Length: 71
Image (tube, rainbow, N blue to C red; front, side, top):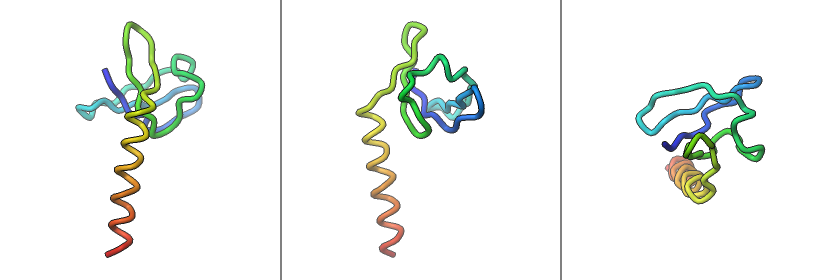
């Protein structure tokens, strides 16, 4: 399953699934490089950062923000 890291709270990360459901996960279960806004995939009991999906999401958000500032 694919999640977005919504926020980090102490020793926990709040993840949002594609369907909008949120879960709390111990930060120790995530890769060290994982941070807010990253896309992570949960496979076979392990979380991995999806760098390609994260970069694409950030690019889409950047484009939307730039479009808003142009108006």
